[in-house]
Image (cartoon, rainbow, N blue to C red; front, side, top):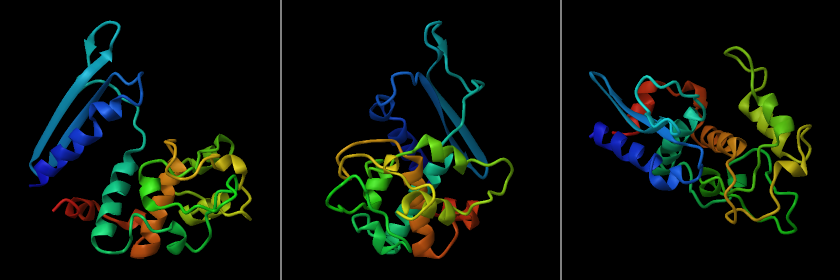
Length: 205
């Protein structure tokens, strides 16, 4: 059963719809990993101009791996009744998130965060400050998000948000994904970093 679920997730994630969002993206690999079973499948090209196939030895930059875990944790939180995907996230947070570029404070929901349509943007000036060398960040997830999204935060700016209502425009947002993770923390009372590998696998059972 677990293997089937992994295959479905991989197929959806790597569908032609997703690939179509980036014309430079020419190849990818998916893997199914179980206690005693590993399978790797590859598609596309490592070098399209030279028609060199993408294979299991292709070196690939890794990014946004945590978003897969956030997505699974979000669905589990929804399944357990911790959250509603269409409820204003401010009902779950200990600070307010409002788009300063809009006259009417339209609500932002977990569905918006999960689909990168929340209007929250990655402001490069502050976004790079979220990166850290070493295993431990000097800022907690809450501290960074509060400084970035709360109107009184030292990293707050109108450039942290788009000029359109939530749900109107797709804009890939790492900050938005981090906020979804923080909502899960607030509602489940479990820090995302404390969720063990076996818990993530249990999401698929």
